[in-house]
Length: 269
Image 1: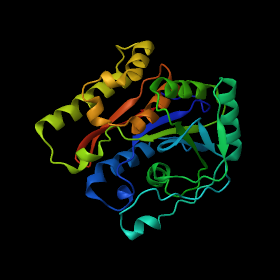
Image 2: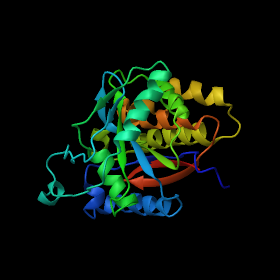
Image 3: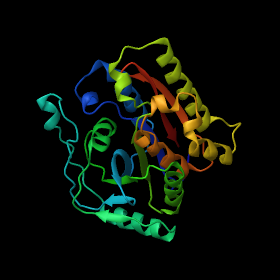
Image 4: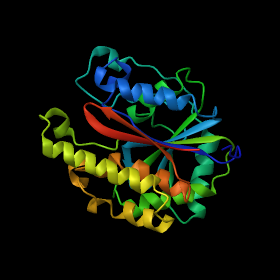
């Protein structure tokens, strides 16, 4: 169904392991294909706001530089990983408007004109929009990792008037680093699958009211397999921001395997 150009499209994506999606790693084939499929469904945005799991600050902080550099915030990967380029411009005007939106909602927010884009931004953006022509702004998580607070950050974004904006929550629906490198067992498969089923139901079920969904996301730790899938929740919280912004809208779910784990992505159009 067509939506007004002022209504943002919203995408929560699972961004995979470091730069591996850009290096032809077979464990990321489904992820790359899924993002390419999603890219074909998106309007061409005027700008992209990315909430990355890889930036935490005391208050929501927004990149405001005109030409942000890249931050190669990973180690132990092939040399080519450190020469990846994604020279998209920033959008200082959008950054200032975001700060104003947060202040109007009673949320303290800061600008950072020096920080660059981490791999939670440039890896998926290079797949979605490889020509690097669309301006990007990055928004941090808050370091308390409070679920209700990140939903409120998303709700505050409903007050942003920016035509044809794409909002991307860049995290991972499964993020247990030890489990990625340990032998898979029937128990770990069950825990992974149970949390994914809960997450997909929470985001997409029409049987849940907006309040039900919000309550489930706030108390996400009660979900089956929650702390196995997210020993630390920074890769889940970009989804909370997306859901807060989406309000009563329901997304389409994309279910896939990444690094031999069940994962999901969500698109609100």
